[in-house]
Amino acid sequence: MKDLTINVGDYKLNVRAAAIIIHNNKLLVHKNINSDHYALIGGRVEAGEDSESTVKREVKEEIGKKIEITGYISTIENFFEMKGEKYHEILFIHKAEFINKEDKEIEHTLKNIEGKDYLQYEWLELDKIAEYPLVPNVVKEVLKQNKLPIHKINNELNSNT
Image (tube, rainbow, N blue to C red):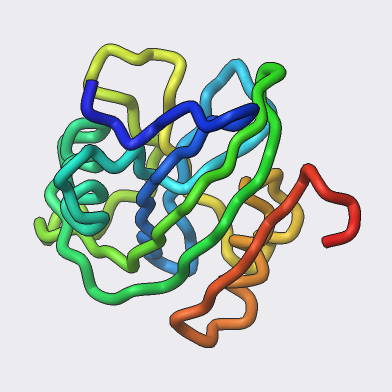
């Protein structure tokens, strides 16, 4: 595995890249049906791979769609705990668009094509984004502020931030 995830002391250092794809004022996100939150579509950056290539690869692998990167949105330094492990994650978020004209019309829930039946891809209404459990939570601020690019720190491990 070439993912940029390494153990550093008590932390897992993770480098991820994600896409913001918006159609008809709706944001495409992924959801593990066994969890209670949504996340941006994307995945871990592999060693030697840039974050734009990661986003293109992940979208192609997960839902079989080709995308183009249309801008840079945000860098988020994300600190959180999951399954008893502390994470220090660097998340690069790119603006993206489907290349295929028919794909730009999709509004239904999409299935994972890698055989991961627990993953599905849904469209969330941007006007109601504050109501959804989207992680990291600061993504909602980034979308609302609409001043790009933006750098954010999301620290769920330290109550002072």
